[in-house]
Image (cartoon, rainbow, N blue to C red; front, top):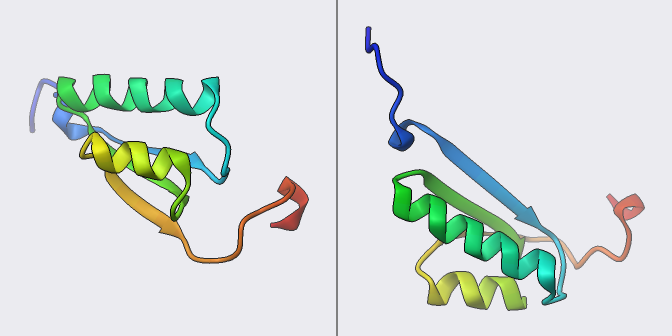
Length: 77
């Protein structure tokens, strides 16, 4: 049994089902980059061809795509 927890033991999934590019999305990318550089396994779940997807690819983050049409409201789920 290991007595220490390492950052590489953690996996974080960021979810952003939006086509917007605003403060929330920029902050999400900044946080993901910081945590990735600290050793955490980062995954981003977003819409394909969205601004956050494009930025995540530029920053070499692991991206997973929502395969259904874009959501207009949370109630669409």
